[in-house]
Image: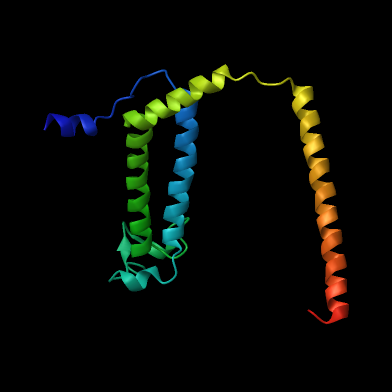
Length: 159
């Protein structure tokens, strides 16, 4: 029983450490959970897989299809998507905030990022410009070779 209580304990593991890494990971994974729930809600013919529709029934004196932000009314797909989203957020909280291995990894990652010696702004702007120019030149060369080969292969009848 004590192990189960420690597993689901809602406390901040190692407070004050890895804050930026945890927030960043939490926000990005939260968007992933939101995308998954939204995709599940928009899954084609979701209502076929769950019996019973609630679209025309009354809910607190209003028709469900008149609720703001819900185009199709409250459907089983919407209910399942909300439940998946809520479970995903709770799991995300337990994984990122409470999960000792995940939190230690994010804390160590943030600590290592503080040790990195970052180049001055003019240096990485110049390097970025060199990379972009190189990509344009190589892309132009590849496009030119592709066009020449297409002309040659078309004239010889191989294409």
